[in-house]
Image (tube, rainbow, N blue to C red; front, side):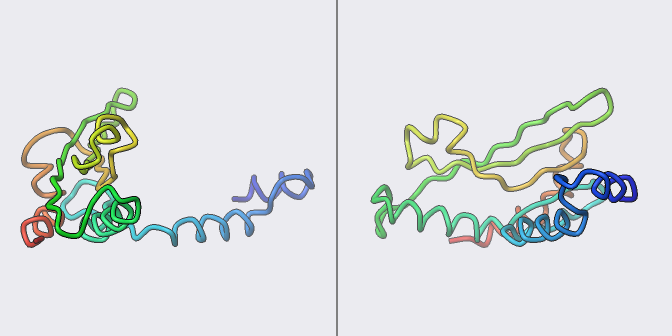
Length: 137
């Protein structure tokens, strides 16, 4: 913070630390991010809220009708970033979208966890999502 402040004082084109923090707060207000349970660091969003938003979008575009039952696929993928950093990404896809569901634009974010890919770690870190999904109708 001190280094940025010094640079911003010398270079008038650089935004101040205050403006950057204000902009970050504004960006973060767009998402309702929560920490994942368990010991592993991670963030998650509400599956229900995200799914309702996607359903409204599909109904508005005429892809999904109110009486249609949609199919959702949950997937996870581990990513190694460097030697010691492993991340698990959890996403879902609405299969009703067909062509869009087949590429990266059809994936909706659910959680990102800093952990190794094993059953016990994922079970603890995804407990909230599992509970919400089992109660969904």
